[in-house]
Image 1 (cartoon, rainbow over the protein chains, first blue to last red):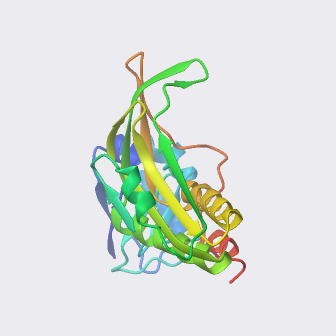
Image 2 (image 1 turned 120 degrees about the vertical axis):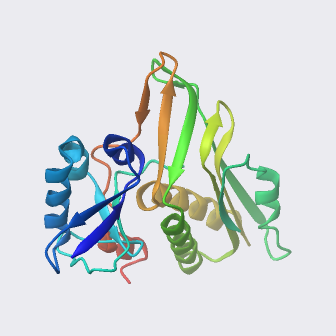
Length: 81
Length: 153
């Protein structure tokens, strides 16, 4: 399935884009999707290890299943306030 | 009142927004751009957010505050874009019948916002370098963390 992943802050700058598209297996787990992003964008690897993932604007776990039409974002450690 | 804005925050309006005749106390927290972090000098900060999720997460935190403390009102305003020295990046106001609830709720909300809400800041240092702040070793936001933040719901 084709998925789109929103990127922010350092992840956005390291990849030079606010959103990337990836072709992944149906029902991929969040942890495996993170590995696929790392493989495609090695510059982001270190940051991806420290980042969370959100699905439909809620934090996911490594074991969460990614669905085709999910709104997906990589959430590097936050620093608001 | 919950919003995210690229404009300067009018902190007096944020405080005004929690006024209530039932409140005997109002607390206003304002976060501002600090010039020195140890030896390092900041010239400005720039904030970025995942706006739709950030607004939902802030609303969840306000809902949690209302469930955990007996308060009257709670407002959160966060600025994005460039925030100069001494300018406000965030204002949180809470009102309650007595002061303890407002103090505790405001402190908790700001602590949780710094873990749960997808907003990021970039340091512009005086030596010309820039750096996104992605704290290592910080608590990771997860649904479990959020549930425990809500009191084990």
